[in-house]
Length: 563
Image (cartoon, rainbow, N blue to C red):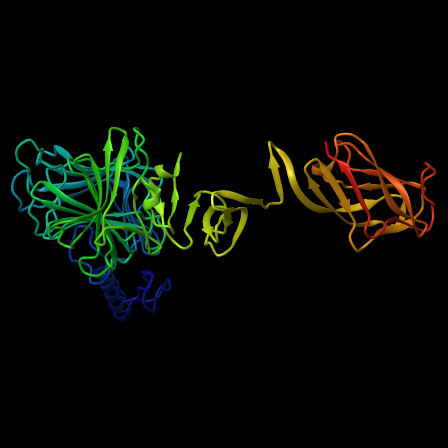
């Protein structure tokens, strides 16, 4: 047979014949047998015989598919590329298969499943995309459809999932309906340990998953890692029939409650409301603490692990909006602070312990809370402020009361007021601070500034110290003189801080260095709008020598009124 791999037929040797030559049987039989063989290898249009090997097709296009129909040449199958096959109807692509992708296209594409051996009206299921929504449907045999699950989207974001069903169950589960006034649930998860999980897909690593678990008569809310291999239970609800016995919070570092419209950040409402605190790593029967309200009293109590009883260690009794009694109780019949006893005392001060310190309003006999220690301390911690600005402290030590500021861990403290006493006499009140004021006016303050002297070709800059006492200010140069090389007859000290500028110009006698010699002179200290003090050498206004060393010698001092 003389077909090549492309299907082209070529006559056998001896062809074509030459005009005028005699026809031989060898040529005729060989040629005709070869043609017969080639015709037998051709595909019959009437379906006589079948292909003996694969049927290669022209790849085609959407307008002219490689496999088509004579009466509808624009419908069929074509090959768009390697492993990419597409079905078209009237040149419109409706189905595509590419590697692992099967894609339906159209104005309302649908994929339908027909379970032919199912009962009537229970055979047909389909998925259909329409108007930007995807619907999973069940169909009757007459193609009447009912949506079961509807998905909606906005661009690349899923905006909603609607499930229309009487119940949703897990494998092997039994769905129970409530009786009486409780409505049948829209969604019920039934199992020996049913779990409802939320997965925040864009959350941080190991912070995406949360789960609700019903287990052993409890409802638990858990934080779950991404692999689902570990979890922490932080809320547990215990019940007896339809009564909620206990709601427990655990395994968290901080708890924040948002105020309600009535102002309370957290409310526990019951005829006997109770908050339990469970220290899980404490010894047996030492874990549970209660705060409960009962009979117009607020009780702080400790309870055994089985919650069978409780013992109050503090009780607050109220009358309307006022707390009328605060009662402390303990096995030793007292309440302690820093290992020392604190308790309400007899109204007669003579009956008090001689070492006892106390807080009172009015006279000493009206004390309502007594603190007893060799060095009692009260701390105030102001939350929400910057680091090391929160802690204030009041302590009593060595017959002195000390007010202090402290860093946040109380490792460093600085006193700002100390009161010393002898009996009922206040011996001294010592105030310490950069600036001590009364009615907005500084009583005592000190500091320094970098002063600059004009009229110099070189030098003339140094540290000037100042101290304010009441309404007077003293400027002082310590051991290092502030001098320079003079090039004019004038000299002005600049950069006086605002806090020490007087309200009017003042003339102050002082000493200067002029042409290398210390002489008497005076200085005019400017008013509050200026930061300068003008200097004059000697008793005249002739000024300084415009040469040599001039300035403020070591020990230079000038005092003036601030107001």
